Length: 243
Image (cartoon, rainbow, N blue to C red; front, top):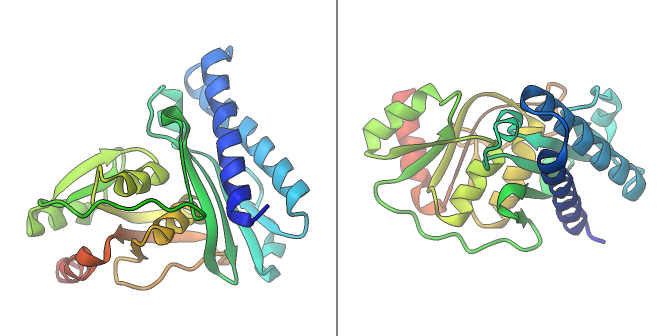
């Protein structure tokens, strides 16, 4: 099984577990979110340790094992991206499984279980062309301050939603044209979305155009921009002017 196939299989399996827990479990609200985090993480950690025993793992739900810094291959796992949305029984939550090699994202999968969908690097979709005005996917709870200014400067509209993975999938499906985030998020948030976005031909960068780096000592992605090449230069220039 290739790394991409493994990421896809695990994201789907974890998503199925989370859906069953939400439909049949005895808890609700925050307790449901906590239970989902734990159950999905246990499944993913056990499977990765079994299938890729020599690789390091960085998971949101595990203590950071700093030995990963000397590893070439590091899996980046968010067992439940959008815990709040999951607990609120919304659809905009995801499972992230990705692999970085030598600090660059290599393969990965993002599942949106409530829609029965999983996008992975082995089978990238054809992304619809951008619309006008541009639609920018932003956090529904913590929208980037620069996003409103960018929308005003370019005539774009903001589309709030949960989960970094779901925002990325919205662009891949043509429901948005851009995913913009400003403010620290962890590598397990950004890794799998970056993997599937790049595989589908999106440009993935920081807001100043620099490429993303992974398996850092402080595993943080401070900002991210994902969009088709046709609009990247315009957006980077507008961000630079606003900054």
